[in-house]
Length: 368
Image (cartoon, rainbow, N blue to C red; front, side, top):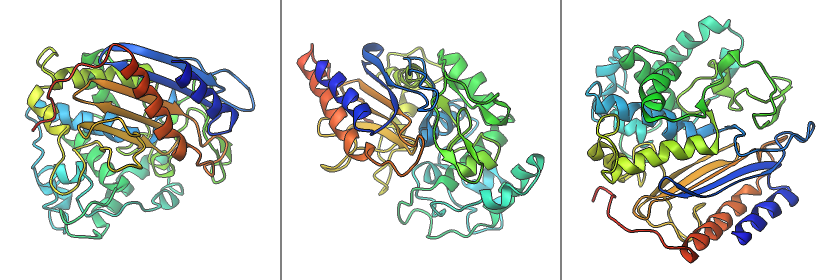
């Protein structure tokens, strides 16, 4: 424990991030949950265990993939469904046959990123969503679907559209009503454009030059912000406790320990199992090689994700270990990249702390 706390304190002192919350757990049992530093270098408000952070790309697994999982569980959607079968707008395009699972695993052939915010920000808010959808339909693929992995924010923007079309609800409303609510998950939310503004309960991120404001409670990602703050690739905010709660529900379902219903065991196992050549599972990343951000001790049967703002989680599925690290490393500038070297070190420290403890139980839940 002392080694972990010292490492986090050193991260603050050396400027890796101004503020952070670290939570490590074995299943539902929380082993450490500590706050460090400040939410905002100007107000100097202290981070607490309940401070919310802009989760950035953690939106992909914790919102978009979770929503698809629940829709699939209810039979409203299948992972192999072609895109044009769900969104007829794609019927006469090269993307008609792209499958939902290809979008989830970044093998759809969609480009990694395009600055759609530049066009959207010049439009009235009510015109932006239809304009974004037209852009996604018209956008050329950069490779044949299924051929290679291209980590794509745009593919997840399409998935958010899928969720909304199939559910008949805005994605944030569907998540609250059909995912987070039934699972008892609190602390995960999309502030959207109606958020009242700077708030010490939310960690600040970057001073944005084109928005001319210090971002606090407003999504950092340019495209997500221009689209209204609720998107498939970014826009979710949350606390470490909220992230842990959702992950522990998925983990319990994977091991057959959860009440049947929202998250069927076989489906969760599929989301935790590598798909095709991508090396990824639907919605999640996996630790690969000696330079993984997960460090040296997470097994190959682990899933996780990183967020650009300085957030991450890793979950060792077999050993039931969950580590959530939330920071605001982009505050006040995205040029601070010290988190890259820091992440594997803190994960090693946490896993060594766990190993020195009572030890994690081992059971197979990797879908193999």
